[in-house]
Structure formats: structure tokens, C-alpha cells
Length: 172
Image (cartoon, rainbow, N blue to C red; front, side, top):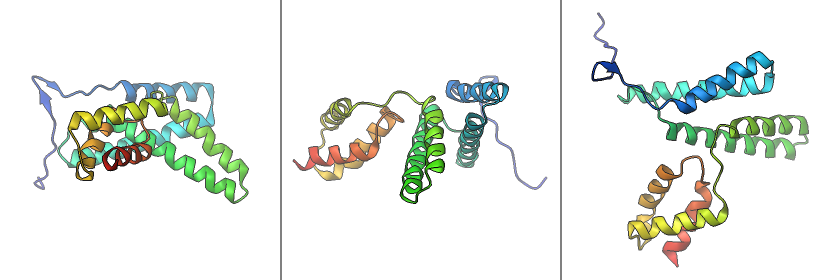
């Protein structure tokens, strides 16, 4: 052998399995789109699946045999939505409404697999609770608070807005 060993994680006598609910939903959505011949939905879900597999491969190189968990998948979906929003804006600015429209349709497909986002009031309350819960008093504690928010509200909270709110709480 070349000295490379394949790693398999075992829990008891069974291979390690993660909560695959989100992965299964995406796979089922892909099959449904195939059967219904919905080209846009199918291509979007294939892009999502490819991104998840890419992250799984990166996770395995970090000795996380099971790949990424649902929280990381939600973060990935949020990132994909944000990329498409930015692309749609660029297309609108450059007089390409048909491409902007396609990006917005892809956003709708991706959002079907995400939990409902928090409202501004809920985001404000969650930030205030996190700041108090961590006992944060200065901007040095911002990373700890943001890490907690990202872990707790993955895919549901706009971290850009949350960062501004955290800064406001800590500075004021």
C-alpha cells in the first residue's frame, strides 16, 4: 500500500451516522424535481448537493469522518442565498433582468430548505440575551458572542445585522 489509510468512524459496531434530515430533504427534493421535470429546481438542488459534498470532503480531511452537520449545511445555504442576492443586484445594475430573475428563483428554491429567518425584533432580543449570557462588557468579547449566535441560530439570523447589534450593545 501507499501508506494512505481510509478512515471510518465507528460508534459501537455501527458506522457513525449524523442527523441526515436536511440532506435527505434535499435528496428527496432532487428526486421530486427530476420526476416533475422542473429544470430550475433540479439544477439548483444539484448545486446545493455539490456544495455539501465539497464541504464533506474538506471536513474529512480535518478528521471529521461524518462530514458536516445540519448547522453547517444551514450556514452553507445562507451563504448561497447571499451570493445569489448579490448576483441578482449586479445583474439588475447591468440591465440583465432575466438573469436577476433566475437568481431570485434559485433563492426561493434554496429557502424552502431553510428555517424561517428571525424578525428584526427577535434578532435584537437574541443578541441582547447573548450579550447578557456571556457577561460581555467590551468589544473584545464580540467574537465569543458571535460564535454563540452562529451556533445557536445558524441559517436563521443575518450575521451582518447581528454583528452591528452586538457592537451597539457593547459600545453603548
